[in-house]
Length: 241
Image 1 (cartoon, rainbow, N blue to C red):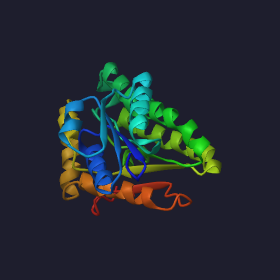
Image 2 (cartoon, rainbow, N blue to C red):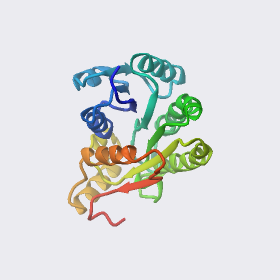
Image 3 (cartoon, rainbow, N blue to C red):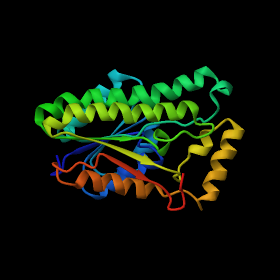
């Protein structure tokens, strides 16, 4: 067991999750990494990392992974709920099966993660939960209909949890990235939505690096436990919308 506390990251196989795993590992933390593609987690080759194949929609699997990570490295001190998908489309054009998947992963997945660690954090009177939302959790964008709804949900549930956990010195942080360099465009099957997203990225001179978002998360966590950065929005400088 290492000297620093355990950090749990969902959706750690790519994008912001991967960069966050690397940032916390560099800072000396043992890791509990969750993703559906476990081989990509292992390919990161990070020290003191417990890698588990988990679909965040499966509450039992999330709880089992936490038990495995904590058996190796002690209690989860920081949980980063990053797992999410963004198959953008207009609501009326989107296959209900697709938007149901967006809701289950982006909303239920976050709830499963939070519910699994909150009681123990409350009992210890210590812990930090970081929920990765989006600037689309504060503003509505074309082709983001259901996706925006899920990210507005993340803000709302985080606000309630923050209120409940604050008397126990447990922090709940929301990080809302704007346009970010990830593999999101590759998941967009709707060509109109993909073209809209790519044109927006071009207008702002490209997205920010996932590493910059990861370093923002690490900075917020490293503040003293009695200091809470409740909400952080990070975008390209040229993104004024």
